[in-house]
Amino acid sequence: MPILSRFSGRWFLALGGALTLAGCGAVIPPGSPGGRPAARPQPATPRPPLPQVPTPVPTPGGTPTEAGPAPAVAAGLTLGPDLDTLLPASSDRTALAFRAFRASCPSLVRRRDQSGLTSGSDWQAACTAAASWSEANAREFFRRNFEAVQIGDGKAYATGYYEPEIAGCRTPVPGCETPLYKRPADLIDVDLGLFSDSLKGKRIRGKVDKTNFIPYDDRGAITAGSLAGRGLEIAYANDPIELFFLEIQGSGRLRLPDGGVMRVGYDGQNGRDYTGIGKLMKDRGLIQAGSMQDIMGYLRANPAEGVALMNENKSYVFFRELTGAGPIGALGIAVTPEATVAADPSFVPLGAPVLLSLDRAEPNGLWVAQDTGGAIKGSNRFDTFWGAGERARGIAGGMSGRGSALLLLPIGTYARLTSQQNAAPPPLP
Image 1 (cartoon, rainbow, N blue to C red):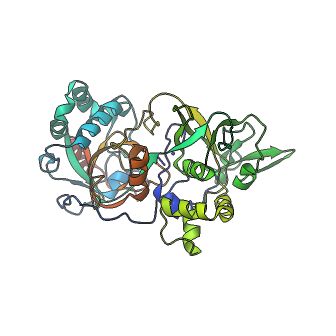
Image 2 (cartoon, one colour; image 1 turned 60 degrees about the vertical axis):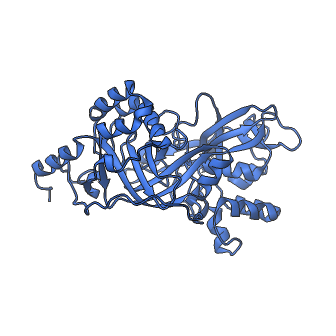
């Protein structure tokens, strides 16, 4: 959900739970109001689980502070099996992951790793090797340059997101009249921490009305035309329901009448709380499952009620036209279909390879953490990116996989973190 910035460049909104779970309460809702579908997909042939590794012991790294070690270190680290026993002999995903890793290197070697596991210089040797390595021998590249490390208990949960493509047009014509708006100039963010230390980290979003600061127009008002005639329209959609789900993803493509494509991305949100209508519909007995397909089917079959249901989600997303390659992820580069995974940067260094072994066949293998998301939190929570088109939509919309995850870190990282543990002074009282 993937989410621009989720959203200044981190574009995606992961699809699943956003549809079924109400968004977390926040003064300004997360840039990606996304979540995941409740319905579990039909069983697929699973890959054998990764070999079991011992239960990790928390490994305090660096110099302890009152706040304690970094989250990834505090979760506990365990050295995994040799990669030669884990990587498939031949895999298109391994080659895709190699390509994604190589593209990540310029950012990877410069970034501060929020997880506390690595520094930019730790990745330099692998990135230097990747620059001249043959993609055809990707498996050997990962085997020679990395070691597998389990974070926490290694129990993974993965969902999916995609870049939706819907029918649209640049200028309104009959049958294509639902506007996509850019961010209005009168939508203002206020940092409440500037007014009180007790409100540090809290922000609100709204507009000025004479001498008052008030909430911005909600979805119902905007779809009823409160922004019409202000020159904010950047394009139009054929189907308001498809546009509603494009907002949940936070980014996507408009398929134009002349066969061209216009890519649009997140340009802000109206500051109203996000409400997942899938959960509302399930709670009211309107649908049995909570997948995107179930929700869309009900909205189409009950158009008047469907409008009212969509308006219960007061959050509204604004868009801007994107140019250049692909949707942009949290690393500031285009995400890679079937190779990019969104992860929590507090536990997973952005740019690091991740090996998944789940009870769904499609996501098994190597991915690269190139994105983040508001709903993607925890040491082994991932969101897999499937690209654009009907196949991507079908897989992402039903993706809900559980199993094991291992993080691939430069060889020697685990030993360094372990030696830091042994050398670290006792935690402060």
